[in-house]
Image 1 (cartoon, rainbow, N blue to C red):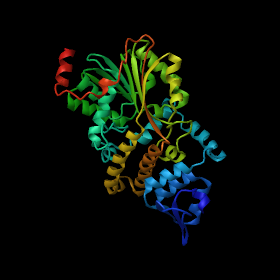
Image 2 (tube, rainbow, N blue to C red):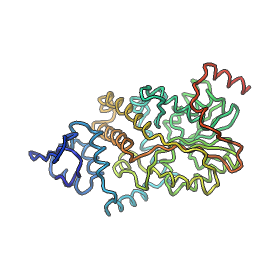
Image 3 (tube, rainbow, N blue to C red):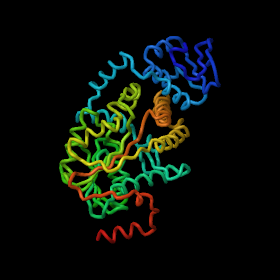
Image 4 (cartoon, rainbow, N blue to C red):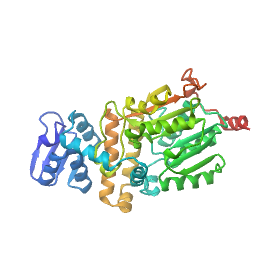
Length: 396
């Protein structure tokens, strides 16, 4: 029984049989309903555990996140043959072609805006926040992230920006309102685009922001700036050259761009259960792999930052809010869905804490771009109370 779960400090209970760790205090008790579940767990740990937890055939009594941290640390370095074959099958069945991407994105992001509003911040940002101090609220940290992205890009009033994978529209609207730029934002999630258009209408920024329900591969106009926050994970490594071509087509040799994405320190597929049940088609690349987008087009990398622990903090907030709304999620989506998403959020938090996942921000520019990053000093200057008025005055 112990071999099935590895050396994690967990007490295992199957039926009446109990197996405590040989040393140290257990972080939790893993209660397995029957031996059939134990066999599935031994045969296929990733999918077996996820499915059994979602259906209630496995209960974790105690620290769920801590248990998953130990499980990640104890995971074998080399995947089994079965896991490698399944990864190939998932890569084939969840291809990020235009129709494939539409299906993959619809599966995850069109679950309903009401569901996401239960545990995201008021701007509906579903990407890593930036916490100037660990005690900042999620709302403050997400606004700080929006401002940080804009500052890294050194946006100037009147410039044109294309954003691909725009979520519910927060960044595009923020750029227009606070930095005086004109944004065209692309997304293939119908529910997100409709939400973003309604939000832009309420804010009175439709003259500066246009939300387009279309694939990033169809972007064809020229822009000063390219920006992608949280989309590269859904592109698929096979399509990085394609994405690079799109970026080159839009900003040429003189523009600048920004990639913000979940990544890894070494090449490894995403957890198979997450790919099957939560995030089809997703792949977190290494920093080196992401260069396959930029290097063929001769883009210059100007700045790289890793916000891994900021994503862990973001997920702490999301998980706490999710737990406080758990009963509502059950009423909306059912118990199995609610338990699956609890596991997904807890597992993601554990992965960022132990370093299985990273969060990279990459700033880049065309080979002939006049854009120069001299220091990072201006990124951390406090906001002026008159900032918005000054920006709009300069834009007129």
